[in-house]
Image (cartoon, rainbow, N blue to C red; front, side, top):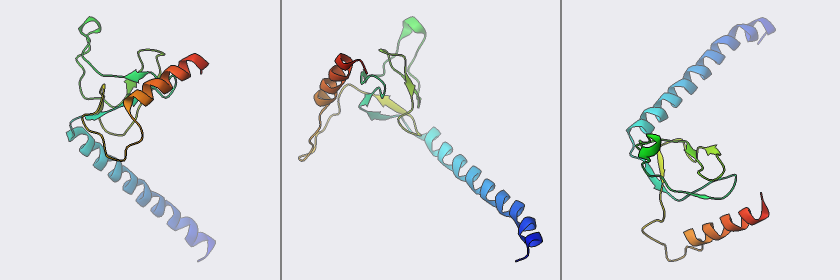
Length: 117
């Protein structure tokens, strides 16, 4: 392929890649908008504080489906997934071979707090 042919096909390839990426983004965005929030154990990545979602009428927060979460301890805002999630205090089940619990997470958060991370 000559250099001129290469330059001529580059915009066409770039346009196809761009169109494909946009299509995929819209696909996942549509799926995410249809989902109920996924209940998860959420811990702030900055300070380790456990994040539990709940309505807060004093701040006009009704707890609608959302992807980004605000840490009530340090103010960090993070997104644990590309779909709506809701922070819960504890999960309802535990697997037979699970080696981590919410209590382990709380202990780690306390440790991080003591270290002043």
